[in-house]
Length: 283
Image 1 (cartoon, helix red, strand yellow):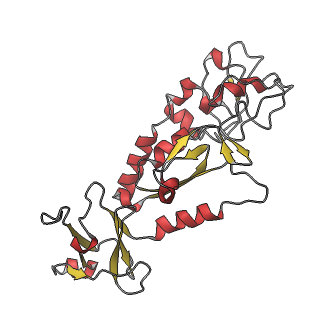
Image 2: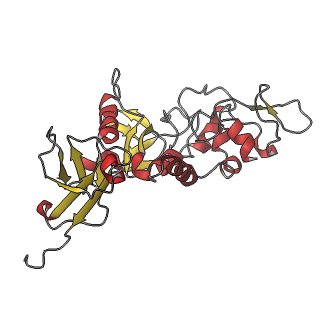
Image 3: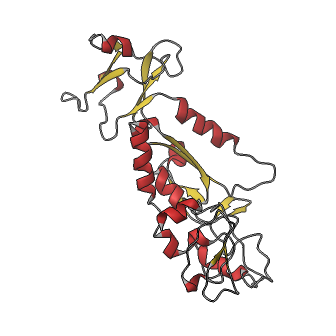
């Protein structure tokens, strides 16, 4: 049941938590787990399987809560989706529409490191013993399922697809993606952490499909929580340069966002944003 799976920490596909293997000596296939693991019988077709592969099996994946449901529950907990920021480092390729927004979208897929960067040209799972009879069973869980552990020309994948992570991240506007298959020894994910910290700390309002005719046609008003509770109307904020320490706002044209500067965006504050989307006199 879903409750059993959740007890086994099978929420996303990578790192299922407890490693359960099929008991070969059982009259009917059963999971051999520790005392805190799930007590349910898997489909006989699951045996044998590599340790840790349970959450990749189609029958199990169908019982997991959908990423969109996880996102919905988190949004309910936070009250509004804009309070959630998601950073993903996993099996994926960055797929943003422009170089500036490359990390804002991703295509899930198995990957390996190469001199040119993350590559999806791989099959089977790196680190598995090619002489192990279960090694080839990992190949069915990579994006390219045609590889073989015994093929000397096979390029092994360093990570499996992070599809559920990408689907979860896509539920929120404040997100950033980085491939875990970054090439080069000694490299870390410092810049990915910087990007994530930036989307976490920036106080921005997404305008979505409303595009202002010009930044000067945006009006931002604010009432602090105490003023709003006292019945005072929001007052207009001035437009400032990005990074200014003075209270105000600026417009991010690349991402079509209005962001605050010199002000912390606090729960209970009230903002009114007015946008003139079309100048009837412009040519």
